[in-house]
Image 1: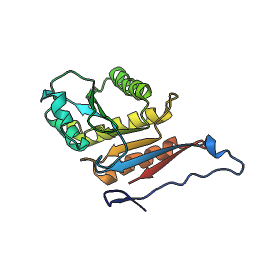
Image 2: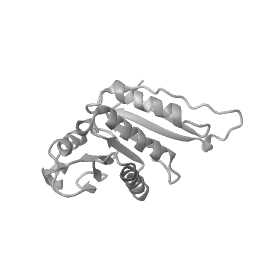
Image 3: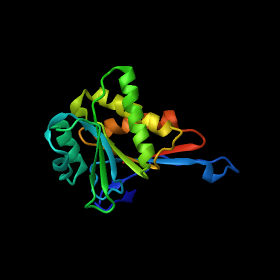
Image 4: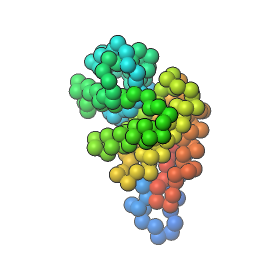
Length: 199
C-alpha cells in the first residue's frame, strides 16, 4: 500500500512480468489511477463532458476541485460551444480542462469525437491525462461504454499514450469504475505493454 499526501491509500493490482533476457526498456508501462479528487494529484490535463448552459469558462475555472468543475459543467453547462480547452495559469504547472459536448450514438460522430480527443492529447502531449465522463449526462452503462471506448483507443494509439491516466471516481462508484478498468487491463495488456491499476 502506498500512502498519498492526503493520507488515503491505493494498492497496485498488477506486477509486470518479463521473460528471461527481455529488455526491460521494451515494456510500455501505463499507470491507471482511480482517484476521488484531483487534490495533490500530479495531473494538470483533464478531459470531460459539458452541455450548453449559463456558466462562463472563467467561472468554471474558479472551481479548484476538478470534480466540482465537471459537476457544474454537466449540471449547468457552459455558454460557449464546445469543444473548449480552459486554462488556469495561476497554478504551477498550469491546469488545463478539455470540455467536449456529449457525442450522439451515431457511429460516425462518435468516431470523430474520439479522434478529436486522441489528436488533442497527441498535440498537447501531457505526461498524465485525467478523465471524467459524467454519468449524470447519460445512463451509467452508456458513460462506462464511452469511457471504455476512449481509453481503449488512447492506450492502443500509435501516437503514444501518456504514462499515467487518472480516472475521477465521481458518481460512478469505485467498484463500477474498477470493473471497467480491470476489463480493459485484460483486453489490452500484451508482452510489451503492461497496465498497472491503482485505487
